[in-house]
Length: 522
Figure 1: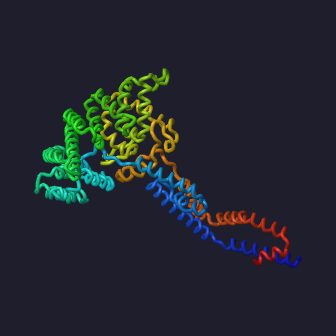
Figure 2: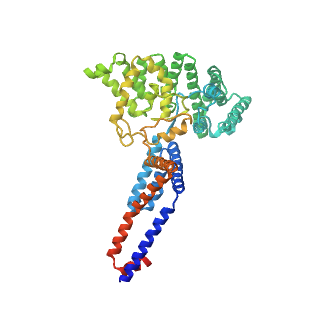
């Protein structure tokens, strides 16, 4: 028994000597290389994590942990009933996110040739993303084509033109279709993409109106002769409504605002069921330009209904009208002394309602963030909708004295009412979590997308930043003071191994020598 214990003690002493000899043989260059390599690796991890967070809005390490490691560690319940319930819940949440993040055609979208392309010529930047233009191509195919187009040569050419990615190829196809006959959709394409001024676009749209009106009247008489004629009439209706709406927008751009208002009103009376074009938003903007606030209120009374989908135009225009009644005499100091009057309270509540619907708009209206050209499609409650609204309505807010001051004083109070906007809303549904991803697809890369609620940096980015800084500092100190840092490193390692040696000695003294001998042999 004593022989075994003496042998074990000798082995322990021998191992300790080996450890101390190993530590003594380590040179300062080793510590410099160790800390430098650690700093480099943690720095690379930090750069990758930061890039991934900026692009996708989440931490790569956290995503991998949740997606792959949690199931391996037993994070998924094996109960079949729970699985079925969770799958149903996931499908419901997926359907909800799809509906929340539905992309809408921008009712105030600009003209590609006369406005978007001019911006590209001047700045060298592309204002539209490929995703946005692809959605527009899908819209054109939906609105301007039908199954019977192959029976008419000009329409067959235009059916291919709307699928063409190259703008020059589309324009050439439109000219080719016009050589066959007067094709309304060919004029539309040329007005949108080839015309370099609004006046040229208006001229082409008038030619499109002449051709489109004749097609509409002919198909209207034949629409009951079969499903093919019915589909053709539906297409001709969409074409006619689109042309008239764009003609009204041309008149608005060229300063003939009253004419534009009349054209929009007539169009809404003639085709009251085609709400997908959101012509009332064009009408609201034109009426605000005329400062016809009573007419604006009448339009809002019809469309600001609980059963109808909301928009930033509806909510912020309602807030502007209520702010107009009190903003010229509003003073935050006086309001804090005497309290808010009934009219002021109504205006503040309207602003809070608008900000809850789209929290990105105030920064553009208050010029805290620079505007860009609005995209052809918008995401409701997203940054793209905020840009589209502020681009056209900032002038209307500036025209109302004190309106922007009232907005500046009150808009941030909205966030105190909804501290957890992703989980619970106040007047609307919770804020969709998917808006940031969709807006990044719709808006150009040179624009910094507004994010709400503001995301905090993930833990792993902060951790790798701290690790990188710490190891870089150690590498620098080791390079500058190698001997001193070597002493500190040896002392640190000795201290680190001291508890382990203490535990080993205690275990050796407690366990029987024969058992300890067997364990060491194993």
